[in-house]
Image 1 (cartoon, helix red, strand yellow):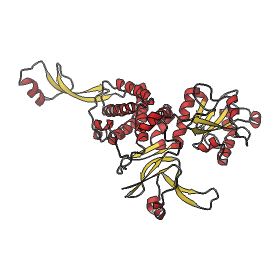
Image 2 (cartoon, rainbow, N blue to C red):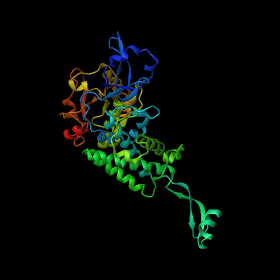
Image 3 (cartoon, rainbow, N blue to C red):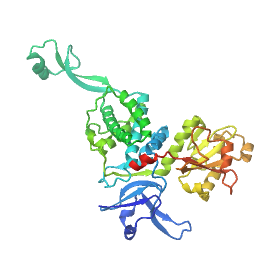
Image 4 (cartoon, one colour):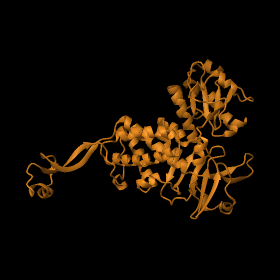
Length: 430
């Protein structure tokens, strides 16, 4: 097995160049054919996805986060992402995906990203289940009862009661409405695995894991009456139920956690040196992180992915005094004062879209014609900066917007949105 490691937006290693036109290079998740801005030449390179993937039967590729993003506090970022309904809904399949159908890849580079990703998303989904109430169903039970219930098991009753003279007992098989269903037992077992994993994160000194542990304890308390004795084959297919929409994804995530550790709870507290093939869309993950912070600060004032004529702007900030159009761009170069012309054109189209203006509260056609709605490009920033969304003060106000304009343009602003960072000691241990 050959494992080749690169970072986001890096070119593929030279050893892959001779095979770039073969069948193996089609429909891969971590790299694609990139053409230069002049359109003169192109090459395969990584883009906004990180993860691990088999390129062919013998060679695997691992794409790590770009320079400067290595010390992100992933649990803190992921908890904010999956705090929103959109984050939980878009999670599996859009933000990330894991493929257990192919052999694991021997590499531990992304171990501190993949494990928190699964656990945080799973706990977020289970919290929603707990808030709605656990699913109940009729579960087959059997035992010695003082009165007949359901059907009598004559053979077992003869052996267990009649032979020894227990005339006051009868062995019965019956159905009982209970929360101890196969799905709930599977989720309970995965929660116990998650408890071991979070315990290891706490031992490493990750402060964000304290909040995750609190959420996990709340979930386990709600599943106190549920057993954890279950096998994966018992939950073959979960029927969709509109009243319990979260169960389908919770069961998928629970199976992934159990498969990740071969259904052995002892392995959940041990380090693993292999990872399954997976990918994470960092651009979409960052977008949901920003959404989580904005929703916490402004609630219904933030419209996410509103459907307008020219597309779907990431965020519309609905405010009578200062409506805004905000768009996330996973491009740290905005922090260096540069900008992408295509991004500017995209936001300029949103600012002149009548549907977008109506959603922002600008209803009259005459008012729309003269409206100049400020456009804000939000980019990732790891280091502390002067202009940022910190949640403690209002990040959206005219004064702070005027601090970070794009000088070459009118009504356009850049805003660094800091990512949570691990402390130096914790980063060294990881």
